[in-house]
Image 1 (cartoon, rainbow, N blue to C red):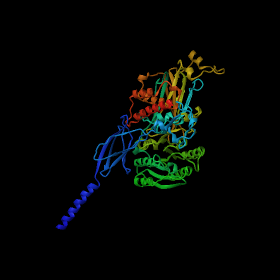
Image 2: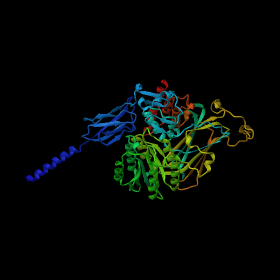
Image 3: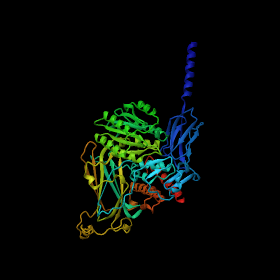
Image 4: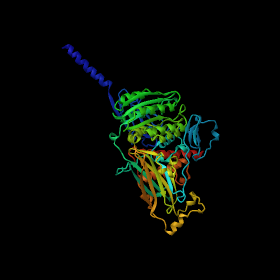
Length: 625
């Protein structure tokens, strides 16, 4: 009996000890900035562990921690990290402050603010102007980033150029990259600002197509917010949404850059966390392989079922950075693995995660294009996730995604990783239409001039529209694409400010003669939108045609989405220093966006307003110097 009592007593003690050992509690709170505005996407982590959470759209967080935890660490890009002592608290509210160098320690340059220690000795050679410079490289002593040249689209006369043709673009890397610059106390360089990617960063929740087509086409025409003499046309398409359970199986190859340039907290560690989020979305029928490259390339995980998440995560956890960058060899090895495990009725895709620095092996853009285009024709696509700062090769990554029938995004935070790889999972990985092209024909009876806002590196020749051999953009499940045109109508008194006139043509009949004689048709139409696309497994395109009548809304009658999208475009032009919005300052843009009353559930619109206000502040600091 005594023995039984002792055993029972021991069990009770063990139970009490176990309760104490594994005791946990929940802490909640709100994180704000120093102006008392909530901060979504703040990382909240138990100090010394990888266990954590992020704040929601309202800046709120909930985290379950061990009783042995002493501190929580709060971090957010552009803000000073903060440690909070837990004590016996169940609620901890936190204020984070901007992490910007003081003005005494900074030098203001043409596109932002940098610490003196980061600049070369030739500071005096930098123009201290208030406009965003037209320079083509972002280059500091410790930072060298490459961007493709952007020359803004000019106004065209529909009598000489009635057709505007471009490829769709669902990339959104530019927006999060701009956010990274601004959060770090800089205005972005001119060529980092791709307005179409800023616009298409947001989900406007257009209605799904109601027929068998893979997407629906929408349009809206209203007065232009920054020039009441002009019109602004919004053209959009919405891809059909497919539930994750109904997506075809995926054959994915993670191609991961583990070179020395990735040895930073905002590169490889963030990359691994981002891919773990994606792994959590995979199903049993999906397969994952992992190829890494540094001084050489190698396979670190053979094809593994998405149901075996622990094995995939373990392989990711073992990765570390070091060595040079054999990107070309990595690409070849990833394609080889993808082809060996090709799914005839599935999604075959490489996900390249890198800062874009390819300096060993295949290094020229032309060589990479040829390799990627050849593999694209076999049905292996490539999606690119960019990381990091300082050695970022945006131009190279954009080419890879464009030529590889994939999309390109830049991940600067856990919140962005969640958006790209969880919330937009289907669109990121599964293509519902390829080679999607727009062509708009403008009616010179009503249009004196027009210009496409953004899409500068997506412009096609007019004959490319009907040529099914010409590659164009892809649309993923649930993706939407929005484009804007600024239109100067016939009779506008500022036409010569934007489009100098030419002498009448000698050998062609002027369209104005036909208009006066009443010989023109379609007099009630402003333009016609045409769209071509191919289904993923087909090589012949299909055509959609949508005429748009010459009926223009007043701004007060425009939709919330129209107002919000036009505000983003104005911000992008402001960041570029384009003269079209000279009379529309940052405060006007913020007021216009707020009046739109458009608000997304995730809170990205609030974040954008904060970024515009920061842009304004940085511009004012530049102007003072």
